[in-house]
Image (cartoon, rainbow, N blue to C red; front, top):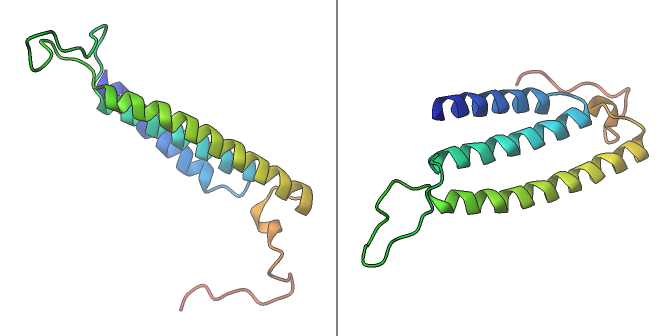
Length: 125
């Protein structure tokens, strides 16, 4: 099961990088969201996958008797979901406002600081 989830995380990261390298703002936002989900799934997989075994230490023992899931990665994922959602909402509003102001979704047409007739920067130094 861990191998399948590791493969899924790799697929998510590859898809996110492909979308982040795009020129469209919407694709970039989807890439950020997919990358956040990939990291959350990676943290969840690191915390071990076990079923129906609560991480409770019985009285008189110093450790659980069975293999249990680590609750720390699960708590980190809950925090990361909230932070990722708020960051995605902020970036969505930022992209919408930039689309309203510049009337463009392509990042190449959003360059206001560079005049169109100016010489291009050198490709190598």
